[in-house]
Image 1: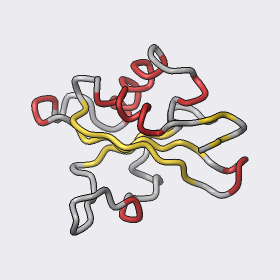
Image 2: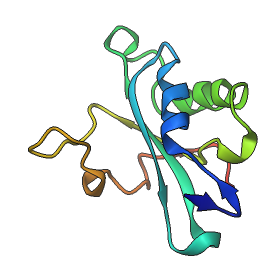
Image 3: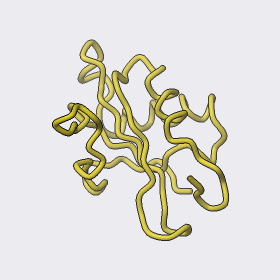
Image 4: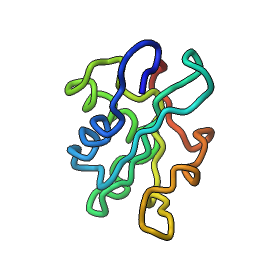
Length: 112
């Protein structure tokens, strides 16, 4: 997919998120309309052994530098949403339509 003229691989971003000790599972999606309105949103499930250590704004403040050290700045998500678990379909696949729209539960640390 392309956002603001850059080729983006959400799976690569999610793989770098899971490398962080506080993250058990993650998915990154592009949300918004049109090329100018799209933004990357990271949904992160906190690892059980790290639950409570980094939640909300602290989680975003931890994950943004982690990703910035491993990825180009233009593919670091602009918003991080903590989840208890990723929503799954009956077949056990990620249900992208069930991901919450980032609003109050999102912790934005920057925009594309």
